[in-house]
Each structure stands twice: as C-alpha cells, then as structure tokens.
Length: 151
Image (cartoon, rainbow, N blue to C red; front, side, top):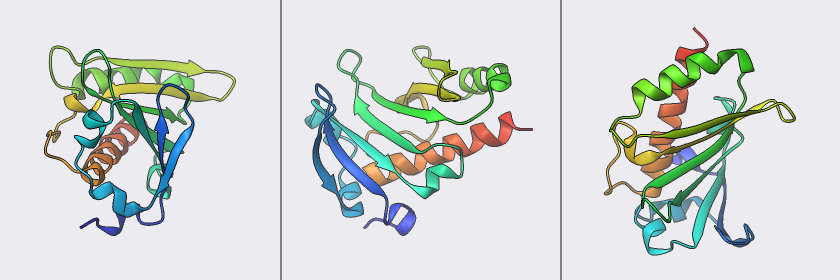
C-alpha cells in the first residue's frame, strides 16, 4: 500500500523515444515494483510533487538505462551556480560503487542544475523497492544533498 507521501502527485508514464505521454497515473501506480521500468524499457516515469519542491526540484524522471541497465534519475535542481564544488563533493562521496557516475551541468538559461545519476548507487537502493519507495529514496538523497550544500 502506498503511503500518502506522493498522494496527489502528478505522474506520467512517457515514451523514451518521443517523450510523449502514454498515460497519466494515480499514486496507486507507485505500488508497482521498480522492476516495472526494466520490464517496460521504452518508458520513463515523470513525477511532479510538492515533496520535491521543498528541495528546489519541480519534477523527477526515472527510467532504465538502455546500455548499463541502471535506474537513471533525471531532474533540475534550483541551486546557485556557486554551489557547484559542494554539489560535486556530495555526489562523489554519497554515490557508492566504482561505476557510480553522475552528470551535472548548469543551465544559465533556467538557472538550474541538470542532474542525472543512477539510483543503483544511492545508499538504501535495492532491486526489491517499489516505485514509491524509490521516489522516497530519491527525495531523501536530495534532501540531504541540499541540506549539506547550503551549510
């Protein structure tokens, strides 16, 4: 059963190829196992929630990487450009594993950091997670990142 953390969130299943919406989902969809994305490799999940907004994130997308098979998290992070060293330090020290990589690029147009990382390297990750638990883990990771970066 889904807790109310993402109740009322805006959730879309989208085509990775066209980025078009396949279906809008209710929070009950988040009861699906994370492996849903492995079984539906042509899709990604787009989730907007006030829960993420507390960390300066409007929405999070989650998909399976076609090459590496990892679960990729993609988002825009509203932090000033001056925080780049602290953001990179946090990501380097909190994404676990030798293959743990991330993409971080500042967009001056939006004033956003475009951040992509593999959920597989976040502490607490397990293939057995539900989508709800996965988005909770992402939110926890982002909350810690923003808290530490702003210190």
